[in-house]
Length: 284
Image (tube, rainbow, N blue to C red):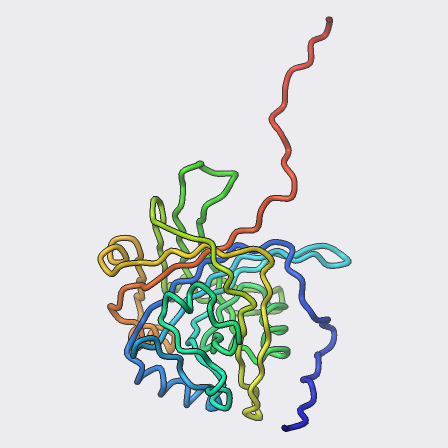
């Protein structure tokens, strides 16, 4: 066994990082494994692509989360372009799974994780923390998003995320008009089930090519929607207007016209409700 030290926690950060609330949608695509292997060899050489009945898995993972700090709070949005992979050295530990078993959380070794290729984020502090703590390939962007909400129509089950280019200046995030890609998912009426698929292991490779792994614990089940190709073609839409960017090229080369294989969602339950007012009579 190798005596590995723990990676340092860069100041001023503290771990674990606690989420106050999380709203999350992930869309999985089963694709040709060869381009996935090539990209992993370039970005994460100690990882091997997971295969499910001969197909690799690419996942787009959008998060809206709130965090409370001693001096206030912050809201962050980000989206990850991930490849499902495992450490090459741990291949003998993994059970043989098909995609639906993986999506239901059957891999209790948690070696099957997300190899981050792109992480676009609208919070400069979160970009710095993700890069320095977890070796995430994280850079600025901004979002226009809609999602189901208890403060919206009761029957709304659609998610829509538009990811746009941004820079970071002296005053913080500097949004630009360029659309990187958009993702739309209409989940109304689709079969779904609760799944215990966390902790989710996230992988990063630091500048010294050391492989880092960090687990995200979510304390309630996700909701998983398995998708048949014909349903996915009607309900899930990925739009990439510019294949000239690196992100656009990877989306086109790895996903292309492939239909989504499954969608998983999580929305934090409310902790309080301010109720409807009523009139108080002046006399009884």
